[in-house]
Length: 111
Length: 109
Image 1: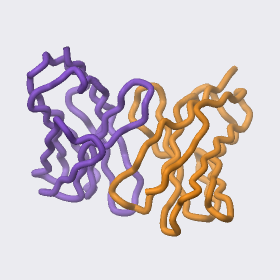
Image 2: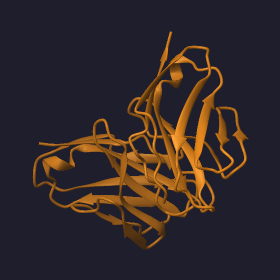
Image 3: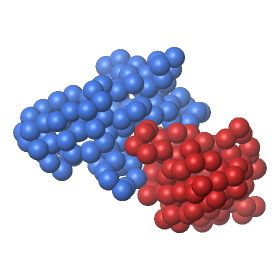
């Protein structure tokens, strides 16, 4: 099992550009999450999904959109990137009764 | 979900036990206590969780007080590789895990 993978690992964007981060899990987990982590801080939940075709807002959803068209994939989109979105993005997944498993993260810089 | 309070940082000598405290005085009866750690800039790693009984696995032990208002994560023989930020989270298998700033543990040679 690869677990939770994230693509890409690093990305530099200019203000106003768009991009999509991909999270994939091969553990057949129902729940998937997107977090961001700014320097020296804990993780903050952006959006999450409790199953294929469903998404919900977390603590800091503004400026992001998500989609869960397939159970194993959870996409995070930035339609118009801003410097405030410079961060490390982590994806996680879990089943109903297990802990969360995290991906390795994506480092995004918006200039 | 209940809020947790942890010390900002702690030091521990290599080979000694590291005891990391967590206060969760508003925990509900159906909420579990979870511990994760984050080494450098990697994704958080699950360590252990429990409801009210003490738990032990190959990584650590979790001691939960009888009133469940606080807990302690114990790394029995800390190594340099245990240097990380440790997060205490309470959750009832709900959707949202709330990660606070955690405790930065430094294991010193």
